[in-house]
Length: 119
Length: 119
DNA sequence: CAGAATCCGATGCGATACTG
DNA sequence: CAGTATCGCATCGGATTCTG
Image 1 (cartoon, chains in turn green, purple, brown, blue):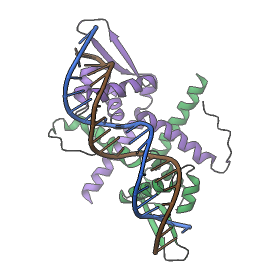
Image 2 (cartoon, helix red, strand yellow; image 1 turned 60 degrees about the horizontal axis):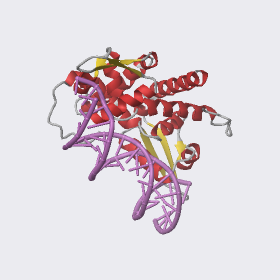
Image 3 (cartoon, helix red, strand yellow; image 1 turned 120 degrees about the horizontal axis):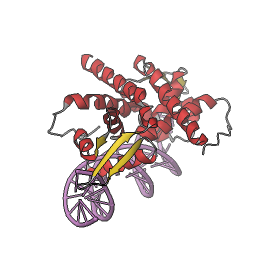
Image 4 (cartoon, chains in turn orange, red, blue, brown; image 1 turned 45 degrees about the horizontal axis):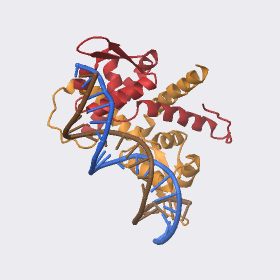
């Protein structure tokens, strides 16, 4: 949701619902964030574990998405002062609050895929 | 069209879940689709009604998104043989099956926005 | 009224190479 | 191990113009 230079703030009520959803999608939308969050629902994971779990993701995207999720307060980055370096990622309370939502999204998609293959 | 000949039994559920979610987001993701669907939850609407409801959308995007939603079987396009032309859009059964999901997405976003403004 | 067509900048995302 | 930096194509989305 960028641009916001809009001069009209008229129908607030109608936009309200859409705003909430737009906000949600801005946080979990995109190709990788849902997968990252799903993985972390199972508990804390380190960078390389995530990388292997998310088949096909590039390092660039993994880092970018992790940074955004962290900035948005959905995950926590835990750095251990060790050699070799170790960094783990964990859902915040806010992140965990999405569990039902994530599962619903997944469920709906799975059901629909099944229906499509039957039809 | 999904084979699912699992080469990886360990993460099957996680990958499965991610696939479902990716599918869902491919259908309702993007900047406008959620808003369009939300509006149509209230009942059939014609082109211009949608256009006015979705403040800021360009005609190009509205048509594009409507076409995709139609192709994906979430909405129905109803053309009346009249002059001036009249076209209405309506949720399909599949589209209606997203209601809870859409509301959940919106709710979560709204709650989080409120939390953010308190914090 | 309900679009189709075209142009164009912004963003998403992947691939590769390099680093503390 | 856990990143950063840079390149480049693909897609998203906005503005404008034209039409039945």
